[in-house]
Amino acid sequence: MAGATRPRTVGERVADADPSAGRLLLVAAGALFWGWLVVSWVNRWLGGPIAPVGEPFVAPDAVESAFAAVPGLAAVAADAAFVVELTPVLAQGTWLTVVITGVSLVCGFFIAVPLAVARVYGRFSAWLSLGYTELLRGTPLLAQLFVLYYGLNLAASVPAALSGVFPRDVVWVAILGFTLNGAAYQAEYIRGAVESVDEGQITAGRAIGLSKIESIYYVVLPQALRYAIPSWTNEFVYLIKYSSLAGFITVPELYYRANQVATDTFRYTAVFLILGAMYLALVLTASKFMERVDDRVAIPGLGANRDR
Amino acid sequence: MTDGDFLRVSDVSKWYGDEQVLDEVSFGMDRGDVTVLIGPSGSGKSTMLRCVNRLAEAQEGSITLDGEEVLSPDTDVDELRREVGMVFQSFNLFAHLSAVGNVALGPRRVLGLSEDEARERAADQLERVGLADQLDSYPAELSGGQQQRVGIARALAMEPKLMLFDEPTSALDPELIGEVLEVMRALVDEGMTMLVVTHEMSFARAVADEVVFLDDGRVVERGPPEQLFERPEKERTGRFLERIASHD
Ligand SMILES: Nc1ncnc2c1ncn2[C@@H]1O[C@H](COP(=O)(O)OP(=O)(O)OP(=O)(O)O)[C@@H](O)[C@H]1O
Ligand SMILES: [Mg+2]
Image (cartoon, rainbow over all chains, first blue to last red; front, side, top):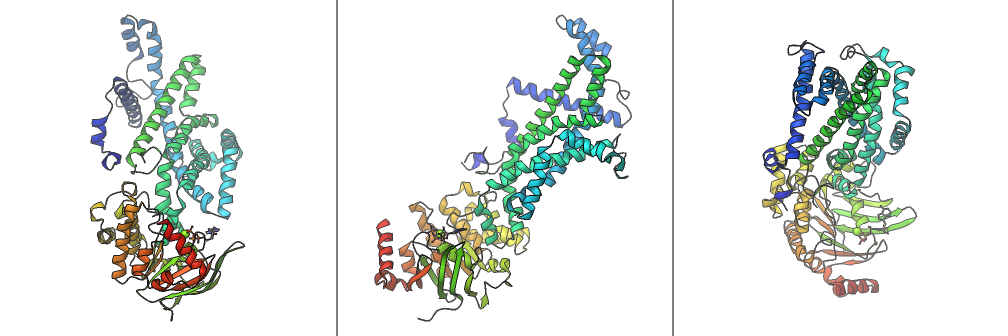
């Protein structure tokens, strides 16, 4: 059992990779999707060396006539042109969606770990942690965003150092909201994992002279965080989708932009189908990525998805 | 019989809630002594061991190690545990660390050795318990006997002056017990002071300077193994020994 359960190297993984057509297609689609996004973002930051900012990389008219020329595709030629026309707006909105999700997730993680540890090992702090998670999980996320934005008017008090990083200060308010809310959910997943670490592990740590905190840091957390990866991935996926709520406090992220286009063009069905596909691509990327992480940090005999 | 005073346990009592689990327990060990604690399940053997390194807190009595009071509130517990190694029935190896990682963690994080020094020390200790070829194996990849030997190496790496063993072989398949006892015998030969909870009577007979029979939190009887095993003074001791013998 020894060698087989070790984390595989990249080379081995490529060699083992399932070469089926479906998989190849998925990888190709992923590369195309992210290639397009990254090129679009870079193009915008550099002031449009590839295509004028706000314009698609290929002319919609050209796409339309190309599709029209192919029998069988002619019927969707107008739709294809519409999709191409939307690409700059979608790329721009996706940037904020990705940034808000990524930053909130990471910041939330650093709050969630102490919350989870306090919940399991604390006394007074366990109650504080419980109060925090119940409050944030028990009230609607949208209401929390509204309190931060309209109630506390936080957009007006974004520190000067942060202001201007994004086109609108309200992006910071969204990040704060998702961080605080996501931390509560992440803490629940991590708490479950911390609790599942055998008590003898901490006893052994203390027996060699580690303090309680050190035992938690060096012994419990490295195991618990590995256990937590699969369920924690859920929170990642939820956050990608929940980030669309930022649109309700006027953050021009993916949902907000798409909604604007739909209202302007009245093509609701087409726009929201495309929007759905965008979120699906982001979510698939996230879960594939976390699968990789899970593989990479795997330790023989540790965790539910490993052979024991 | 004069009690040793390297480790001296005097009238130690402990309660969990209303339940008294240790009742004025007393015994003593000299440096290099091996004392074996025996007794039925629930008699307080593990608790007694844990009071020595303060994983459990005794409410009454005194424990001195090398002249220092262990139970005093001023005692630096982490310092105490550096000097007292412990080996567990269920091994309790750090599941996310390789053998060498398990042994190196204490030297690295508690003693403050560098990464390389800690690794080197860990490799030396693993060699000492016969696992030089398993340095990078994870606990799940090792047999029970190997895991327990890593557990012993982990405790030894802190260079303790006293070793506590809590039923180190009772979770092992019979064919794996020998390799662990062998390592423990070698430690005895090196002059390690050892307080051992075990029901391996042949081991106790061979290496123990004193056997302490604990029942219901009380020391019923204690003495050299020949005396306690062959001519127990108390009836309860005799009955317990018969029961143990019939299990083997
Ligand atoms: N953390 C604890 N909380 C409450 N009671 C405990 C705790 N640990 C042990 N006890 C109780 O103390 C008594 C002595 O337990 P201990 O584990 O010391 O016995 P033991 O002699 O080691 O038994 P065994 O041979 O089963 O290991 C038992 O009645 C047990 O239920
Ligand atoms: Mg016990």
